[in-house]
Amino acid sequence: MELHLLKHSSLSETGVGFPESGSDTVEKVYYDENSERVWINKEQYFDGISKDVWEYRIGALSGDGEVFEGQEEAETNAGGD
Image (cartoon, rainbow, N blue to C red):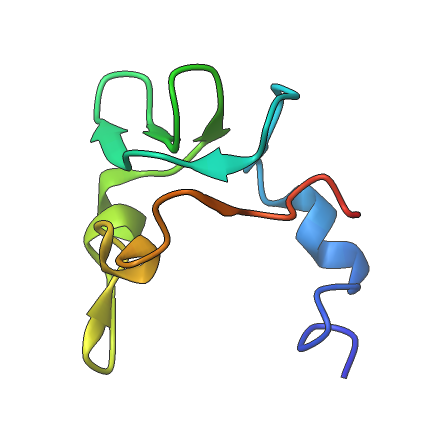
């Protein structure tokens, strides 16, 4: 249950981060393979995203931006608010 609610202790060991504070607004999503970052706007990104994860498919959705489709100008709420 904790894993489903994203509260499991193992999730802190993933190496994925959202290190920059800002507006948390999804403006344009793009992946930078060299830095393994998924950018959501000019200042903010998710860090530690491998190419395999970016291209992984779950059902009809892939990680390569389809998850964010229709979310432009939406807040990510990644800051925990």
